[in-house]
Image 1 (cartoon, rainbow over the protein chains, first blue to last red):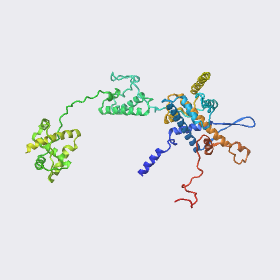
Image 2: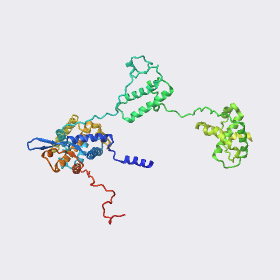
Image 3: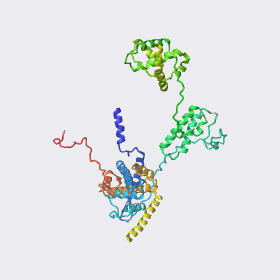
Length: 374
Length: 134
């Protein structure tokens, strides 16, 4: 079923986009119906009175076919116009390009003056036909008025400070901004702030295209969320603190990293057990990576045993770069639970930055502790 | 050279005619809304900020559709009427835009919209069983 659903989705995308459900297709269908309705052929009766014969109704499939044809026609005109504009080394098409495109499309039926090689485009028979057509046919505007994009949903805006005539909470807030609902009702402030920001955004950016509006609304919503998190009522009325893209670039320099806080001290048992196998594992070669991580954990515990509360200070004091020696060896079964314990307490579940710094420190202490133990 | 000058003057006049027509287009409202035409033109790659050119395309399209519709109407009217029982019924013939008339009209414009006469279950339906390849 899932594959069938995907197949249906894919096939729907491949279908002709001008389907009955499409909004522009529906509008085009109405326009075609209006045009067909207005078409009239006059017949002369015996009494010399004109009788106009019109279509009284349409077959739906016929109307849809004609709509498809009209859409294809418009697209062909656009394509040919752009083609002629590009041939002339231009990006935007002009009236003469349109005339040329219309001539090409109408060349099947022919137009007056088509035989003339040196004809002028502005004098083209196509243009004359169109002029004649507009003169003959009655003007039938489209029935519905299409909504302009973006359209206002008639959202009621909050009154501004000047409309309320209330006191200004701060000098930096302009008078024309919507007023706060009042410091009395703090609970409703958050909701109203969101609405206010949205209203501001819609007012500011009326007329822009939807993607940019959505982006701006999203950006403003993020800012509103930040302000809500900080529980600062003043922020929505102010402009955003600063565009991060326009901020000064950060210079690359050495950063004073604060010393890492070590986790709580482990019990003595762990450390004692950890000491013993270390001596024995000096000479073996292969170790799974899990146990390799456990080793530095063990070592860290030992170092802390020696220094209690001053563990941090000793760690920082021992940051001298020394040769790294990796101990590889086998592990006894009794070490299993201690390994797990150390994994839980130490490296695996800490943050990445702390983990890296701790690893470096542990590797450095490896050398020193070996000498101590030995 | 004279011919060139004359053609130059003629061009100016014709340019004036075209520009006049484009100016007059602002008074004439085509049946097809400008937004729709602009949408489909943009879809095919032609974007123009000038409203008059879009109206020109709208009017041209309207003329095209009207021509097709009038041809279909002619075909519809030219079809022999069914058997008339009363004289009054002949005048009350309702004209309906059918696929038949439309396909005949569009055929002249180079658009082939023919309906299949019947729908078959498979491509080999109706073929002599001896020649059918299985």
